[in-house]
Structures are given as C-alpha cells and as structure tokens.
Amino acid sequence: MQVAGILLGGGKSERFGSPKLEAEIGGRRLLDIACTNFLGAGFSPVVFCGRTHPADPRVIVTEPGAEMIDTLRSGLGACPRAPFAFAPADMPALSPELLLPLIEAFRECGKPFLLPVHAGRRGHPAFARLREPFLTARLASDVWRSADLAFHVVASADVLFDVDAPEDLAAAGDALSRRARLVARGDLRG
Image (cartoon, rainbow, N blue to C red; front, side, top):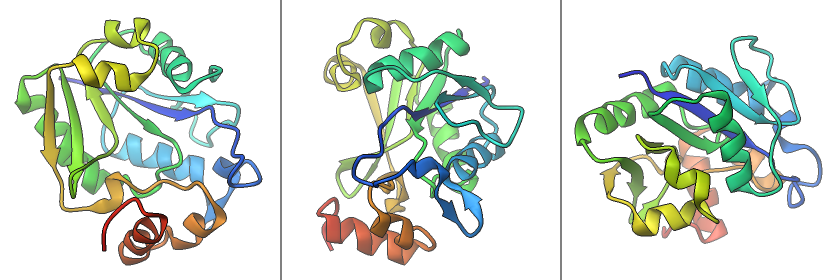
C-alpha cells in the first residue's frame, strides 16, 4: 500500500516574524528538510501546499488555502487517491526513522485513521485511508471527533515539535533541545 504525503505550509508565520519555511537549520531550509524527510520515508507522491518552492523537483506544489483545512484540501486535489498522511511543513524532526514505523503501524492497524501519540498528546503526521471527511469538515479536528481512530504511541516527542518562533528554530538541532523547548512552551510536561 503506497501512502501519499502532504506537507502543509499555508500559515502566515506571524509568530516567527518572517517566512519560517525559508529559515535554515544547518544550512538547509526548513521546507527542504521536511520534503527530504517525507521523500526519504517513501511517501509517494509528496505534495507541498504553500507559497515557497522546495528544492527537490519530485515534490508537487499546490497553492495554500485560507485555513489549514483548505490547504489540506488543496493537497488532496494534487494526490487524488488515498491513503495519505499529512503534517505541517514546519516539523523538521519528522525523520524517516520516525516516519517509517508510523507508516507500518498505519498499514497494519486496519482503521481508517491513525495518529501518533507521545505522553498523551496527539502529534503528526496524521494518517487517513478516507479523503471524504476532510472534503466536508469545517476543521480537521472535526474528523478526529467522529472518526474511527487508531493511536500509535511513540517514544519520541518529535511528533509534537514544530517551529513557531525563532527560539524553536534554535532548538531544532537535537532531540534533547527540542524536548526542552516543548516543555518550555507548555506543550509537554518535563
């Protein structure tokens, strides 16, 4: 079962102060890190919904929507088949090593939807076998309230880590710093 990957990049980067997907970690743009991770995990196709263009020509680019659900719908339009997974493009720690076991858990679970969970918190990427609920939902979270969900517990807090502020970008380089930043933001208990 091939799983498509959709990276959402439609936000305005207001808390970051500049186009955050252009920001660099170790000389690589945040956007390119996310695309490389999804391609390296074997998602196919990989679709990016945003205003910036990834360096890798294998990534399909679509326009973002006004809201996150609209941006997801734009991505679904570019990969019209299910199953698929989606995540914000500002999550640089979703490495292939983290993604591959999630893809396998999704393949094996038999449920229409799967979410990774760390320390009781739902993370990304979200996996789905059905497109239709996202095409009519007001918010993606509306789908989760009514869906037949599987949860896959992961040891890594990286399923929760996104870059919203410059301090997040500074912490993105290693797992301990990312975890400490999640605690400092109140997204995770110490």
